[in-house]
Length: 262
Image (cartoon, rainbow, N blue to C red):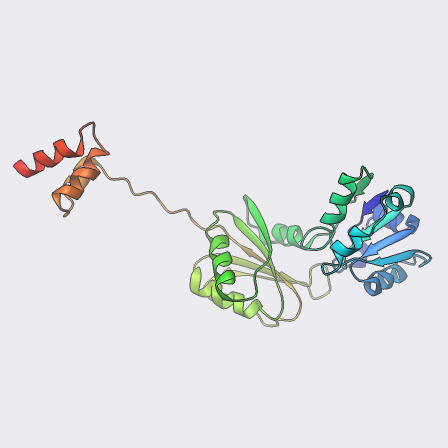
């Protein structure tokens, strides 16, 4: 059986009892970085008498293509990412798909997640969408950012310490009046929250990965014109007649004739 086990995103005390038991009882641990996972197990006083298999974003497909389904069916297996919930901007989803395709029993243990933790801390309310990391540069990045800020939903994304200042500059230019919430070092001693309009954002220290939450902003009000409003617009009669036809039961041709007679 496979268990997807979330690990603390900072504070070691956030590990759950279920997660501890799964790690203790595991025979094989698939992990994003074996060094990080072994260090975690040492801190949790869990013996390292297990098989560790490195499985990260660059080798995930290769590892799974060579994986014998019977191993997952007959042994207690665990997958952990370096921190937080597997499968959320981290490997894990393809291993779940492998289990589904091969009728392998699996379970997901709930636990720490930076995106949801930051969302609750933001104080924003409403529908949200998680966008993971933005493209690094160029038109692809700008197009994605425009898609995010025009989605009509609260947007949650991750940003690296190398690009957080670039993102803030972009937000200041694109949505200066929109509220933005920034969080880093979640659950740790130096946990940091910053909430301000984009134009006023200042980041004192860019170290560490950031969770960025962008409020959805105000919806544009629809402009509603009456028949008389359109009639008084300074437009050519042909264009005006087309618009008026949409607001009445007359054809554009009929209205055009009427306008010509005035």
